[in-house]
Length: 179
Ligand SMILES: [Ca+2]
Ligand SMILES: [Ca+2]
Image (cartoon, rainbow, N blue to C red; front, side, top):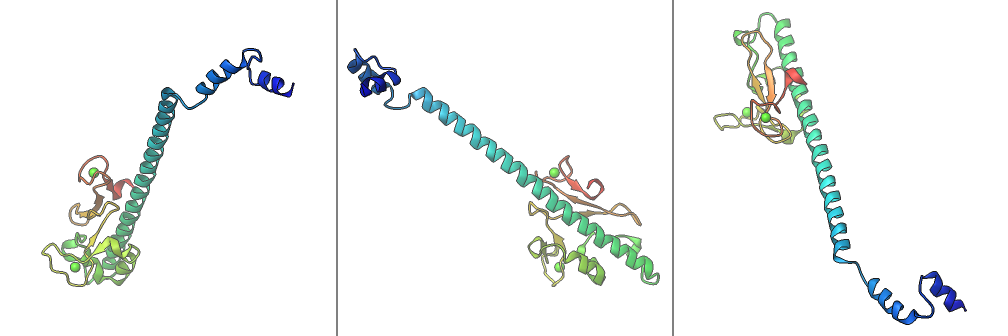
């Protein structure tokens, strides 16, 4: 009796039980090809989604990191301007902002501001290739030098990173005037 109730519960016909049981056990023996493919596709979609979200999060973090370095450079240049405006007898050459970071190093307050940039993002690498112990290059999050672009005598320069695509002068650049 117990067996019959059990079989009825499992949807088996008690009288023709043995054959149906064999068929059913064959059906239940494993996943069909379609079922496996559905699972594979779902896993692929999930994996792609996770990777896409991960890349998006990473790219945003890199943009924030670069904006942070640009902000620090703006502060250092502003400090440079304040310094020379305060010391009237010692103006910067041609009233221009430095496009080379080495010039900032002569002003201790500027140097202190530049210290906020991690050492692995700064390099002592003059264009002529001779290191002299003074930092002259700051890199963005994609390890490309950040440029200080002059805007004419007396005007504050624009600080520009090439952005995620590592190409200068296009839409994804990160600049000090659009922080
Ligand atoms: Ca140097
Ligand atoms: Ca770019």
